[in-house]
Length: 440
Image (cartoon, rainbow, N blue to C red; front, side, top):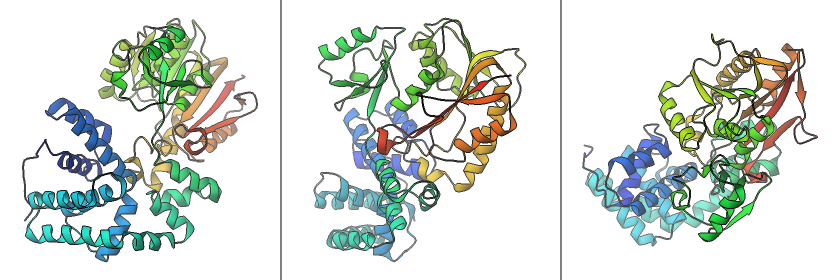
């Protein structure tokens, strides 16, 4: 019988077990779980950070660890608590500096609390067997067929690998899969509504925070491990955490002061606030989103950043809305499969299914078609996603242009009609951007 015990908040491995179980079995967002623990439990910051790193790492290596477990147990179906405790133990053995004996003992102690005597013995036996055979197991996986090996070693579901191989060659695919488990680069977008760029750089230097320039004048790359909240100016809204690829979108849109802008699917507001910043708080931005529950966070974000030219419209972006607006520029950033941001949201890889892509493409087509009706002649529309998917990216745009001869594709960065960012090449999230112009 499964034991029900109160969680020991002083045990970071037990906190890790709870966070991981909620993320993988209950479909909770990993970032939301971290916020929940910070707000609702008296847990030391160091323990929460440890638990988060363990959980994130486990999610990034789950398919590999499960392959080891399946080989050792001959694909035996395991109780959820036992399975997750073994997963946690193997991850610590492989990827942390914890002594191997400590990883085994701590896992056994968790099993004593969350299972029965037989479960405790089973956890102990499997982890000790793994210690003896881990090199042998690694060689078995190295001998798998190329695409199966890439899927398992990088813990990318096989359907994603099979999909990517239809438009990405072997070498690029291997590099892309590997990059999805790398630590994301920390980029800061300087909020020029609150602070001058040079003044913020000086602030970083005064506080001995190392940074480097990027190709965007308002985005810096932080070159050291640091908590965002420790960076001077965080509470004052001097900067916003935004990936370099995401920050490129507003620059590609290129809004001008006094423009009328429509931002479709705008919450939680990263790109919207950047547009406002580039407009110097002049003109008007209509932030369109259907999720009323996320409006509060959006308003908190733009208020902290000092954005004053934004009005929210809670409405279905797929359908016409009553407000009579014609825009100079439009940003369409629709729901997508999110395959480009698995480094930051590792749980996505286990929640997405191949059939999701077709469902999302239908939504994307409808939003783009609807948005285009609100663009002035001569106006420009930018379409962007954070996924690596031909169907959701290039094909959505080409399909739209085939059906709307009053629009044409504009070049970005002088020579490119479509721009894709890859974590394996650009050290950013995976993103896609296209710009179209209404000519009639």
